[in-house]
Image 1 (cartoon, one colour):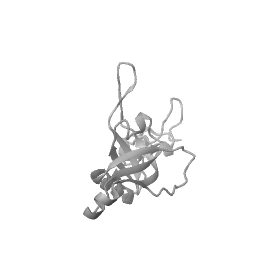
Image 2: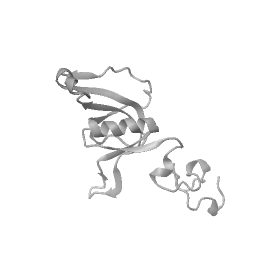
Image 3: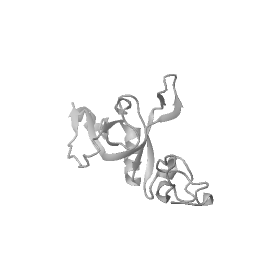
Image 4: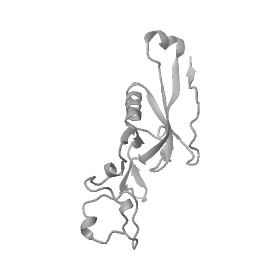
Length: 161
C-alpha cells in the first residue's frame, strides 16, 4: 500500500478504490500518465472512438469492460463488383474491450446516465487503422460477446445481391 500522499498526488486512478481500502500501486496510473481515459490505456494500445446509435451500440447494453465484435456493412471496393456482389457484411475485429460507452457522469431527472453516441474501444495500432477505414467507408455495428467466450469465430461474411 502507498503510505505517502506525495506518492499519489497528480496520478490518475485506473481501477476503483473503495472507501477505507488501502491505495495500491496497481490501482493508479504511472507517474506522468495523467488522469482520465488516457491513463487507462496500456502501453502499445490505443483508444478508438466509434460513433454509435441505439442499434449499433447494442441498444445501450454495451458498458465499459465488456467485449464486442465489430461488423462492417457496405459495398465492396471496385466499380465492377458493386452490381455483381451487392452489399456485404463482414466481421473485422473480434473480442475487443470496451473502455467507455459514452455515458456521462451527469444524470437525468430519473437518476439514469445520459448517453452520448460514442463507444471507445481498446485496440492495437493495426486494429485502429481497420476501424478508421471501416468508419469512413462502411456502416459499423457492435456485437456483444459473452465474457467467457474468447474464441475467434471463422465467420465468412455474407452478402445481399
